[in-house]
Length: 408
Ligand code: ADP
Ligand code: MG
Image: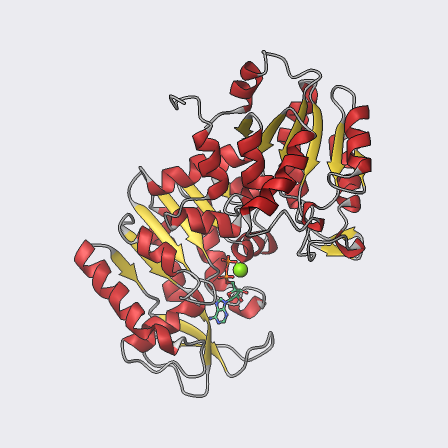
């Protein structure tokens, strides 16, 4: 894929005076107009700063929430533009439309090294339209604002949307640093992982993670299963699971994974003990039981301490680890032990440790770990899972078509 360096060369070796449209992922949680977690804004800063420092006139486009294709003040990017300015240490201009009069005016007035944020791209029906012509028409308007495009919103590269996909067809386009890093890491997990390669899956449902299991069961040496999905596996083996989370329609699939793992020589590891409680609540009395002896009136809310120690020993001895999905209901202190043990083991890995998934990333931060203790914490939940499922991500595929290696 073309990088910003390649793009600079293509534009004559100098970004000064060039209008560069950057697609960032600025989809932060808001409480009114207060940003409650600015992680995505922070993650977007390096690429924007790099372009601005090189003298480009930077136009940032992004979405916030799910407005219905028309302006809605509750989803305005104005507070995000303000925060971006604080993080950049320089005021950021804000256009209260995306491709309208104000966007055009601000674009024309931008000076070298200045940054402007365009209003929520999803205020325009063309952005997410399934109709290629409607999306294309909107992408034409976006493209008309700029001389080049940089795709840096990893959280949206699995979307075939105007500001992600169609605009890259219409302008000289490159991948931003954030997307580049994500892709490099995910490639290492799928193409040439250093072994032992351990995949840890948890979270609430098996059905959410089928594609990832399908694809990684061929590649991993060990597959550790925790979280709510455990109980579908245990039930598939004929054990009672009390009132634990259970996907009755996934029992055959769970059984098939156990068989497949055996055929492929993958060590599929299930917990042998479980922390149970009579109710789903923070102060429910917790006890530890054997995984094949969950009482009828109890539910499993975490993997047990023996299992946590066993999982941790497998993880910490690995050269490559991908972890998605908490081991238990980490939001409640009494059921956070499994997640904490696995997270700690990831920090001890002498190799590549990757945390993927929104709740998993939130879990490690909530449990007091810092981002730099892990090899990589993916910013794009859905996009990273789709990549690991082996799917083609439209926003990456379109950049590959523009790649310099292509004879075209
Ligand atoms: P991610 O966002 O990292 O992909 P998921 O969305 O799949 O993770 O799952 C996260 C949720 O799974 C957490 O809110 C956690 O409380 C829940 N969870 C984990 N273990 C259990 C369990 N045993 N029973 C019910 N919920 C669970
Ligand atoms: Mg989640």
